[in-house]
Length: 234
Image 1 (tube, rainbow, N blue to C red):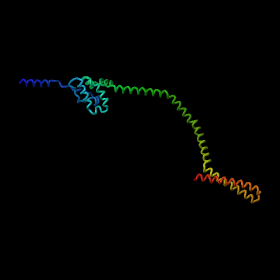
Image 2 (cartoon, rainbow, N blue to C red):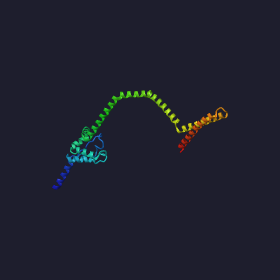
Image 3 (cartoon, rainbow, N blue to C red):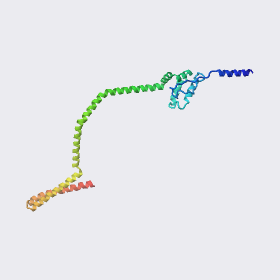
């Protein structure tokens, strides 16, 4: 009978103990920070704080974007906090924000952001200071393009035209053509001398002298033409 009374009292005392309150989380927290299924640990010890953090880190979607090294660094900051402090981080937006800003990775990121912002402002300021000089150089380029460049381009085109004419004049095909024309002219002069001799318009001695000179020139040009043509076709 006494054992029954003791057992009943123990059961009533356990039922009379207040149940742990659910941690209230507001809707502004992301799913990685708050969850309606998280309950307060039984004791405010450091081990219970560690188990509290562990339950949050067990969710695969909550820290999927955080590397294991970064997660370990954050756990170092959370493991020594009491249950009340952890509850405040989940329920107080300002406390959560201050804690976030106190983390070394966040400080480093903010510093890098501020440095980049400062450098960007410096570059923008320097570019604005150079704008008058840029406008002046742009105007000079426009003047050069419309005046000096046009004259220089025209002169360049004329020189290019002269170059093409010279190349065409001294090209192998042009030289062969002129040799052929020169041979034809010598042939005509030779025929003219021959007719003058037959018509007794020239003395034989004068004819021989002129005719010999023309035929020597003809054969020289003919040999040159043949050698050049053979060299080109070979």
